[in-house]
Length: 464
Image (tube, rainbow, N blue to C red; front, side, top):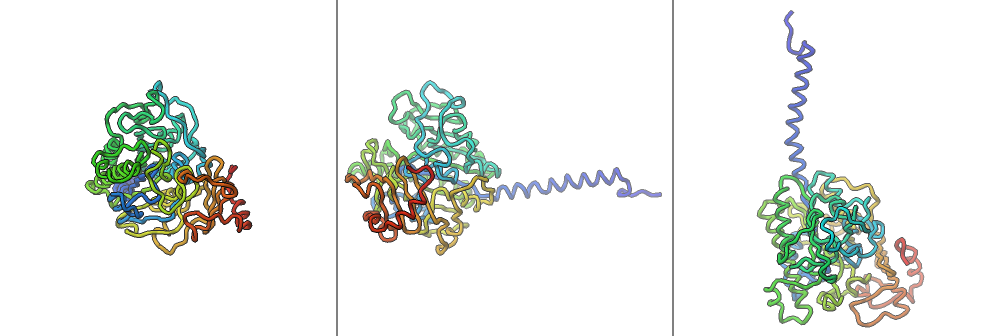
């Protein structure tokens, strides 16, 4: 009897195996294409940039074409709040999608390691809780290459460093700020050199740190351009020390002191944003890349910042304050060809919202942790969509605030940007209607006791 190929069990099994292998090989390009189709994500986090300190936010004395272009090709928010009025907790909220006091960062992080430490792998100390999932964890789990560039300020001990929180690559400093040329911690002397690459100390004296960030960003993007990447580009400008480019220092010389120093640093920041975006365009990656731009908190009025330079415009307060000037900030998202361009959204939004928003836009799975943030995708798609938030909370030291609808209640607020001291009853309880008084000048607490009592019950966990 003549035997066909398919009547022989061994040959039939061989055919099935060959077909299966061929099928898998045929699927590989599809899988690679699907992976490649996922958009890249870059979060540019400015440092201590005032509420209105960009041309697209109404500044008439600042040159910011880079940030303005992101707004022109994206969606700009006018009621966007950071997670906190100071660096570390704001960054913790952005990276985890959760209120900072829930993730071990209710206040600023510790100082960086001393000169005796040449690597970070064995250091101890507190920081962002080791078990918290970050945006980097989320994207790496979805097949993305992940990079941290710039300021960290979320702990340098075991379990708290960038490489412990989902980043494949890290270049930057662990503390609050550095001199941009020597890379020493700005106010703690020569024992605090603070520049690290993948947990190893690196010494690059004389190299301007913002330029190093752009160089490292280009190298990372070039290396990973064939797979999706997530980059946390936490640039340290316009945070003090004000060390802007010489050409901008000359340009702004007519402005009053210290605005001219701050303005020069803002435009220096803006040029680095332009260079990064230009590289994406030259690499053919711009329309495949979502860019988020946000400041971490309001402008500084600390002595190290010459007691000012930035502006909160119509808002009261600055960095360290839960008045609007400390937490209401520039925020833009841009993805040409995929999101609306040149549009403005007035809905209330929050720094914790980027995690669920980016997860939805990129089609990646969210961490299982309960999130504070809510997706802003409906708001991005439609100016008529409601804010996803009913209640928002802030907490720093013994001051806290809660907002529900137009009402905002502040407990023990400070206003470092105003020389006048808050006196009782304003110092203890301050109630503002944001629809009627965006500058928070009139305390309505004495005349609206029932609203004060309702909002008091919404105080953040652990509030004093």
